Every structure is written in C-alpha cells, then in structure tokens.
Image 1 (cartoon, rainbow, N blue to C red):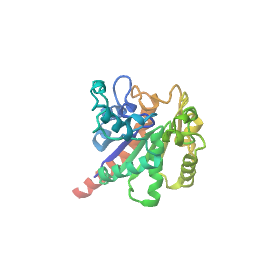
Image 2: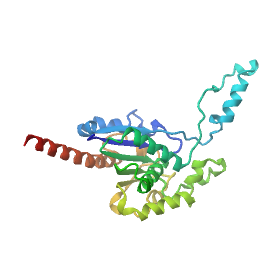
Image 3: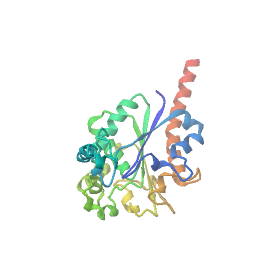
Image 4: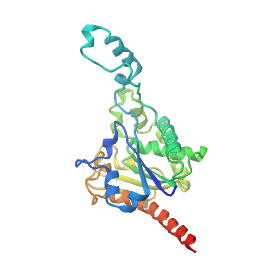
Length: 271
C-alpha cells in the first residue's frame, strides 16, 4: 500500500485532546485540510492508553469494592463505578511500547511507511519502540520520528510528584536508570535511526529545553520554539505556528518520495 501511517502518541495524563487547540481543531485536521497530498497519502491514527496520576479508582480492588457497595441499599443510591468496568492501570514505557508495536503490526503492516509523533512521555514510548526493532525486526517501515517536548533526560516536575508512587512519574524523573539507558542506546544507534525531528518549547516548565534533546541529536534536527509551553507545543492554533510547519514539512518530505515513485511506476506502465 503506497500510503503513510502517521501515528500520534500522547504523554502523561494525555488523551485525544492532547492534539486539539482552543478552536477545537486537531493537529491532524489542520494537516489534512490544508494539504491535499497529505490528505490523500496519509492515514492518521492515535495510540491512546491509560495514564493517570492516581489509578486506584480504576483498579481491581476499587472495582470489587464498588460492586460490593452497590449491593447495600443505603450505599447503592450514591452510584459508583460498574463492576463490569474494565480494570485499567498505568503501565511502564516498555509495556506501552510493546502495545504500540502490536497495534502497528496489525493495522499498518501494509503501509509503505510509518511516522511516529510523540508528545512528552509519548516520545519515549515511540523511542523505545524504534530501538526495540533493531533487535526484533518485526516492524521495518518506521521511517520518521517527531519528538515534541519529550523528556529525554527526565522532567524536574516528576521529582515533586514522586510520592505518588506512579510508575510513569518514576520513569520520568531525571537520572532514572531506564530513561538514561534508553537515551544512551539512542545515541549509540544514531546512524540507524529514522529521520528525526526534535521540537522544543522554550517556555516549557515541565520538560526544560535541555532535557528535551536526546544524546546524539544534530543541531539541524533541533528546533527551539519561542513562546511555546509544554501543553500548546502539540496543538498549534493555525498553519502559521512553527510546530505545525515543522510537522507538515517532515510529513511532506516522506509523501514526496511516494508521489515520485507512483509517477515513475505510472510512466513505466505507459511505455
């Protein structure tokens, strides 16, 4: 299939709203509505996963407790979560990455290319997946990676939340063993990495600018955006915003290769 799968991966406490600006337009919508080739050759997909600071109310114990409480007339009137509701929990970056791998293998194995776009922790999930493929080789069509305010060297804000014992908070702390190992491996495999882009918000107080740049990144791959914070870096207000321009530029580069190849194949058929 001569199409590109563009996969968006949110971060801590994120969801589909991660990519939606104050006007109600998502980054995906802006890309499709303002470029005919992107709309024609790209399929957009969001990899959404459970991520909460406090997960107790979504766990197995809470589920069973609410089921018991609903049997008591006095407590039943207060409602509560259904016993049949799915149990959800925060998972490690490695586990989220393996889940993403399964999604890509099932949904996009026939696509010519895959572009991964990760915001904050989502960038680490994508990063871990890319590195894992050097070992397994299950997915060989990841051709580009866009990191948006990703804590490659951790987030200072995570230090203030470490009392929560949240697995995501633990992995996002500066000098976390797993995150440092991931970044060192990224630097060692620099020559094998897909086309990469690192977008940094200079007003980001969650992931400081120097923490959003991984080992081995070339200056030409790094873009530092003025007046852009952690939340708004991935939800540009319009097509004039630098974050939109940068994402579109990389996608267009990949689309151009497919268009050129299609034109060449059509020309061969006519000869």
